[in-house]
Length: 206
Image (cartoon, rainbow, N blue to C red; front, side, top):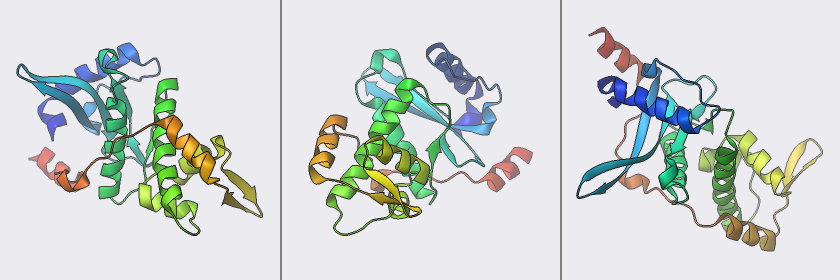
């Protein structure tokens, strides 16, 4: 993978991220992570606007370890692209994912916006009942993140040992307006193979 070919490049990305993320912990051993770098392209070449890293094998089910959009490119929707992309990878892996904690204040806002937009768009179109588990399977969003997001918007109550969804259509519409448009990743155009630890180990041993 790219991480093994360009180890110093990936380390330098981590150093740059440390400049802008107070909670960022530096790992010198970047071999434990996969790096996904987002670029713009013009006549002068490729320009990095942001990236996210992801543990190759996460026991906690994290689908993202660190995310950063460089300051000069913020507020242009690139963070939305990176978050949406991380969940598309989880869907292809048939796994439920969640970002590594702690999240920065900006990170929490970005994720809550993403979760709200994705979940409420499904709820808005859904006829009949839908469970938290259904939402998780459809979106690859962890159930805990679904519950806290819906609780944040007062759309869920705990009754008789289970969570019950109360989604007034007008409230849903208003919340969707507030979070704005998102980024839809066309998974049909995504050329990607899930990480294979066994294959990587064989390659490492030569």
